[in-house]
Image 1 (cartoon, rainbow, N blue to C red):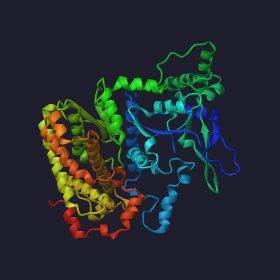
Image 2 (cartoon, rainbow, N blue to C red):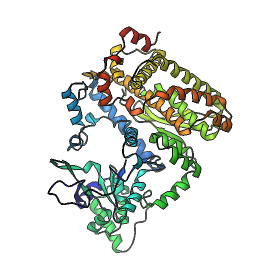
Image 3 (spheres, helix red, strand yellow):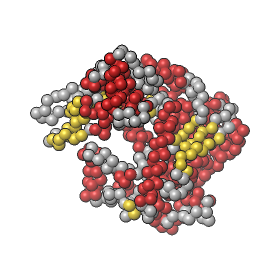
Image 4 (tube, rainbow, N blue to C red):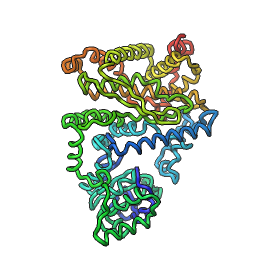
Length: 544
């Protein structure tokens, strides 16, 4: 999340080196082939946050509020709709080549790192779970670790053991103790050095904390950099030169700065294990390690919150800001029943019937980030159970209406669209046109999207994500009806859980449901996926 100005001031003291295999005629650097790599976010380990500490709550909320502001600013600058993307998603060879080249290494490492998140839009809301799943389906699957904490200290502890290089976008890692052989590469500083015949050569500044401290004249250990970072972070208006002089003078007198240490900046594998043991119940931590690795990090955090030894003030879910029309109610509103059901199963199974917890969802309301409590208390257990059966019946009915649609990616996009359209009908809202609905379901581009269409697409994404949450919870709990009934003695929850699990059997992985470029081309190539107009209207649109 970064210390103000630290990267800019330390960059002159970093050492630029070549990454990867050297081109013919180049000398081999220590950072060429064979180096161990740790990634925050081909490597030794790739770590992802599974649980953020309480002191990061303010930062997290500030980021979401910033995304809301960006969305409103974008809406104000495009009042008549969303301009088409610069890439057309048609199936011609030329356009396919255009799409591929736009997401090439060269494009990603352009001088302007924002080029692919064009027009000041908020960050893609589902990029992290999509990346985790892609890695778990790749040759790197054994390297991925969703940790029960913030990823930074795990990266540093691992780099210290293997004398490795940490690749990260977070400058906080510049002040973590990664050991005498550990170092850091910031992803947004990687550059193309040259285009050579056998591949691309990359260069990056290598930040080695001990060496940088020596060059700054403040010692040779990472503690000096931590003192410097503390002053920059906590002292209003202080310049880098002033902070540096303060650290130097105290070092000369043999006096350390008296301040609260940054969170786990000097962690080792042993201290991390003790930290985990202090936070979580041992049995549940082992269960998370075994069964929680497939979870979206947001859901993983809820699972871990439920088993903290010291109960938090609230169990909080921070929903990302969708690409939606900010002049309307949040696109997440439509899919509340699905997420409520996911939380209910999770809390009920965790507490075996006591159900005294609430989940507080943080999501956009107008121009603000607001807290929305979803109750699962025992006093409302019968209402929650009734709602579970209603949701199960609704989803089953809509799913059965499209069970002959193939592939399953398209089937579930039809299911989500129909659910949203039913909600529109129940709220007496104007239904979008058949053409708009079909373009959104199929992922086809248009010259310009209206804000009506943009919001409808966001609502579909919200439904698909929320249904995906239910499946992840059921997988995490490893629900077997006999075990549930024996341990909690509530047949209704077991029955509804198994019913909805049956419906979700053919649900594709979430990122495929969002239709990447590849899936869009595949669907667009196949006319057999287009239903006749009258049949489409009959199945897709509610009869008022």
